[in-house]
Image 1 (cartoon, rainbow, N blue to C red):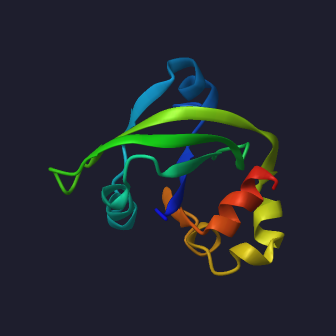
Image 2 (spheres, rainbow, N blue to C red; image 1 turned 60 degrees about the horizontal axis):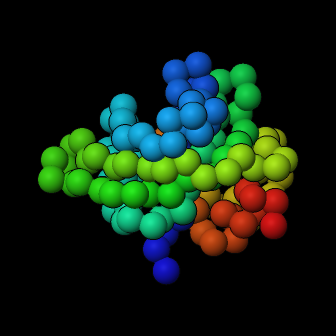
Length: 128
């Protein structure tokens, strides 16, 4: 089963509502080497959680990887398609309080913008 991921975005620059309106977008602006590596490893069909940073700081919606072009290893082109809004957004405080996330880069590496998720973590963020 492919790895699930969480993508962080600053809502004042590009929010989940923007993605829902646009239906699809190319995920760009990622420069951290670990985050870029995570983008390169994505495959079409991979499930994503969209997390808004800034004042909101919570998981707000889902998306799916449509295509990946990793021909430029420093700037992989990952096209994503909007999914659904999460019925009850999950705050950073709730994530930190959940034992499933104790070893997650989401908690341990706060500035990482593309974070791998386990199936259990993905389900927890959906509220399942």
